[in-house]
Image (cartoon, rainbow, N blue to C red; front, side):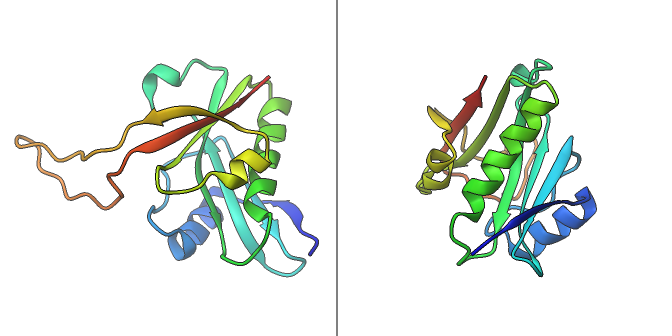
Length: 148
């Protein structure tokens, strides 16, 4: 099956994420977003923005904050990861990162030549003095990167 990349607005990408992502909702902002279509319909999106972790926001690093593909479209996720890196590199960025759940395989990242850095994050944002209801998975994450 042949796929084609296309531009997409943040509002459109967030709408796609809200409809199809398994465990996360929309994001606040982005640097750019990319969509993938099957010749007719959008089948996946990547939203790329500044790193969520402040200590990684050095001006040379971006983060794939959401990647969402409709199930059943082979190689679509790895195509979006690879396209995200090409676009970030063309804009002058030196590093692109993303996090996946520890329970996910990361096979699409490996297919796009990303490197596993290690375990990161996880846990709850809920605190006794600042109660919150977790709407996201609290398991550990795995950090992947691609660099110049």
